[in-house]
Image (cartoon, rainbow, N blue to C red; front, side, top):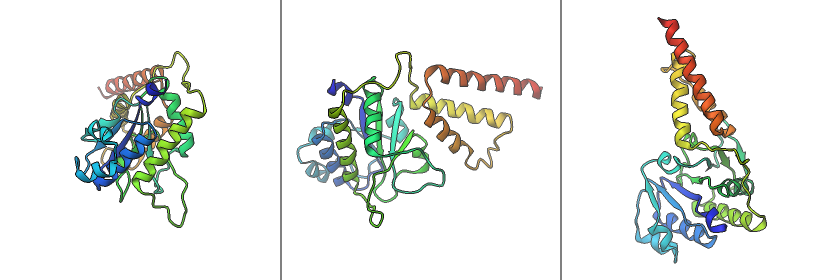
Length: 248
C-alpha cells in the first residue's frame, strides 16, 4: 500500500540555481522513502556536485524527470502544493506541512497524482507558477530568520509525508463517485473562462488587473469534480452562444 501511495507523490524543484541543492533534496527524499523527483529548467543538471550531495541517492537523480515548465510537471496532478515564505498581494489558501501531508496522502491513496513544488533559492515561485497550485505551504520558522534552505524545506515536507503514512491508515478523502479533474483540464477551463469574460465585455484584455488570478484562486480552492467541471464548461459555452446571437 505504501509504495502505491508513494508512486502518486512527486517533489518538484522549479528553476533550481545550485546543483548541490538538487542532490541534497534527492537525499532528503530517499531517507523518507520518496522517489519521484521532477526538475523544471534547472540551471545546472546533471552535475557532479549534485551527485556528491546526493550521497547515495543517485537513483533519484538518474530517474529525475526534466520539464520545460511547471505546467508540464503538474499537468496530470489533481492536488498541487506550492511552498512560499513571501507574503503575496493576493492571498492563497495556506496550510502547514503536517496538514498538507495528510491531504496529499489521502489523495494519493485514491490514485490521484499529488505534487509539492519548491521554487528558486532567491525568489521562490513566480505568481504564474502559483496559479498552478491549489494551496500554499508555510513552514513555521523563526520570524527573525525565516530563510530556510531549499533541501531543508524538502526534508521537512518529506518527513511529514512519511509520518502521515505511518501514523494512520491512509484512506482517500473522496467518495466513490468522485472523478478528479487534472491541472491540465483546469488550464483549459481557465482559458475558456477568460475568453467568455472577454466576449461578454466583463474583462478588458488590455487591463486585466488581477481578476483571473482571483478566479484561479477561487476554483483551485474548490477542487472541482468531473460533474462540476462539465457543468461550468457547459455554462460558459451557453453564455458564449447567447452573447454571439445578441451581437448579430
